Image (cartoon, rainbow, N blue to C red):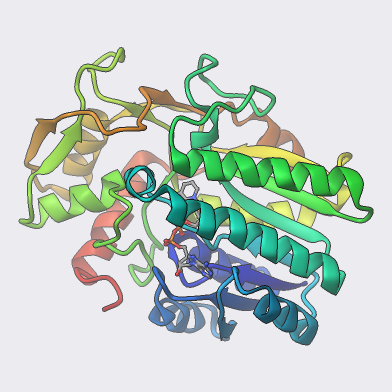
Length: 336
Ligand SMILES: NC(=O)c1ccc[n+]([C@@H]2O[C@H](COP(=O)([O-])OP(=O)(O)OC[C@H]3O[C@@H](n4cnc5c(N)ncnc54)[C@H](O)[C@@H]3O)[C@@H](O)[C@H]2O)c1
């Protein structure tokens, strides 16, 4: 298959581009490099033994997206491009609506015009909120608690209405839980200075002598008071996308939502402990106030992914920590 990967120069997009190339697909990356790095794509080429094509393009630019689709003629699109930090979205909601919603509307419009109707979309467990008790099943109502989650829920609704009313669309909406870790080679990983405020890069920074880790809240209604998340290795997540692209055309419904998680909730303190075991390095940490928009527990029910994709996350928390630490030690400044 020829696959257009938006946001392919970013963390999950680079790992997925590699997995797609390794599975024999051709990859065209479209990224505006606002957050990702072209060097990640050089590393993807080095690991895969062949290059993904690259276009520096913004998904909000409908003319550019239409031209790219018309020229490259992909059979499917995997849409990662967007902003992803809950805290940043609370400070800059408009930036999130612009990038995530407008970007997706334009991309889907350009796909419709170009006759490309197969899409895998990056959604997030953040859409669940706290309305229903975990583990979260896909049919639970969406109730996001922050602007980032609102933008993802809005795009999901837009995709559902397009698929329901326009013929030919095949859409897989993948709701990721908490992707962490890095490629086992130590060559691909998450930008350690990203604004995402994700836990694992912050642990790595603290372990390597940076600021002590801030544990945001230890008064949640969880066994040790810190928030529970469903961590999964980014390489497992990348494989989930390859499966989704292969399966999406055979789904019964034109649009199908699928959780990608392990179904295991682990607390911030458990992750710190696992990291210290895997790395042999102590992580200095302090308790800080809760962050706006955070919820106590986000854990997937992963049964649908197993049933529809034959996919199950295989890698352990120890592997996630080991690979994240190796990446961080070898690339303390990311791709810079
Ligand atoms: N990492 C997570 O914890 C997580 C969890 C759930 C969902 N997601 C979603 O997965 C997707 C990828 O996340 P990631 O962790 O790889 O983030 P990332 O920031 O590493 O990658 C996003 C990429 O998209 C590009 N981009 C952003 N806006 C763009 C635009 N308007 N046009 C073109 N390119 C643009 C960036 O330059 C970057 O390369 C995002 O949509 C994110 O919301 C991520």
